[in-house]
Length: 471
Image (cartoon, rainbow, N blue to C red):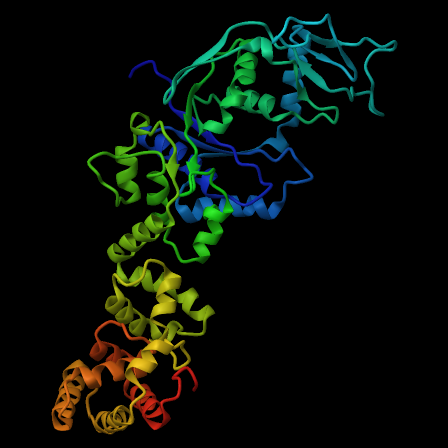
């Protein structure tokens, strides 16, 4: 609409830890709204806590943004903006809206339920100073006794009793701005139009509203999202899966799968649509469709959504993503690209993460894989079974061509000659080949494993029935 400000939103993480699910969800909603509205997405690093802020955490926040595909338009670090905060604090002092004080004492006893008045205790000689002559006293904001309320875009009108809020520090004695003060100064300076954040920040809003009023600036629009809970109804914590984004990356989730899942934690595109590409999320995102109740972090649903994205992904891309996982486990390398691609096609729909692929398809690439003891007991214990596997190994070894079209007739013909059902040969062969009682089509598996490994595994199982994880 003509005359409206261009949308400018910000995500403001603190580099005192890795980027987790809750923070990444907040970042995503800000990013989606900016992209949908043709606005600006600002990444603002709140790194004024010099003791706890670490370079490795900052690197992880930036890397996770890049991996998720959430590009930023502007990047700021609060540690580079210290002078701005000091200047703005001085403005408030000059206007009588803030004051310096080392010691404060309450005024007259207030009415029941009202806050204690706080004021500066004037000392002879004025404020304390450091070697450079700078004040080292904390700066307090003078909280006004006025009605404070705002209209949240999710929760509608929210009111506060300002009389219960004491004066608060905006600049510490070391000259570092506190969270609420730096937040408001930055939001004003950066022309932020919408503040999209979690419900846990509602308690910060009255102090921020008072600061906006003190600076005679209209506050941005607020959007407070209900928090994400665990399946037990308790606030999300690490035990529910609230691990860092890098951990999900290491577990083999696709960025688009994780983004899709996070988007559904507090928003719905409508029409019961769940599987979406990033472009679809941007095109349909609306604050009006954000949920007003808490959402549940369901790991099973995350796995399912990621698996659906894997199904839809190009095989060549899945191979590229799988390579480092396979190489780390010494299962396959660059030379096995075609084999990996064929295995991905065969296992399509059978793995939800890249790590799960490595776990479920390991036998395609190595003889050293875990074996289900129950499968061995059920299918590999009889003496006749062992002899049959040895006969199958001999037949397969003589094949000039080794593929599904030649393997299957050999197995079925041998079963006929032995007077047994084909299943009596196929199931033991499956366990000998894979260590499992369930797998993709056994003839396709054997073609992928290759003639040498197939014969070797059949003879190993047929010779003495040893657990096939022993080379």
